[in-house]
Image 1 (cartoon, rainbow, N blue to C red):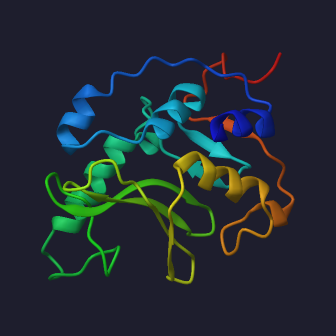
Image 2: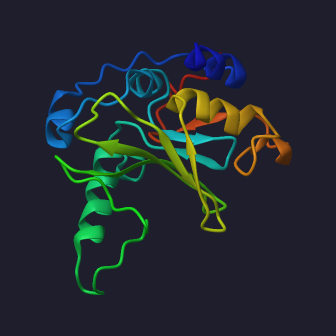
Length: 182
């Protein structure tokens, strides 16, 4: 339902990307949320409203969820600066544990994650950090959260609709078959 609302909101033509999730889900040790996988198959990865960055499963490493999660995990595990985490008081999810998996951000330094617990593999709450560093938990799907960010000006502090940026999507790949209506 929420993915359909995002398609209508952006005027996007679904790409129907076939994604083999098995390898990455095997690496994570948990299955990704079904609605997120649907979003990736429809949009790929890219930028909504020129300001909301969505990580999908694409060749462009900057918008590829597995590539970005691996970088975050590597940095989080780096002990060069002691036991400090960029996502304090949390940690980046490591297989079999509990932590955050990044899936989006904004140009204003907002960051969107899932709080993943290997002992609760079907539970994927959205944890969002505002530019001021405050954490907010949302017990809703990824697609609902993204829709509210883009369409609900009152979705504080994350609603970008109040900035009147329009509701567009630009794919990461730069592919001429970019899903825009012809």
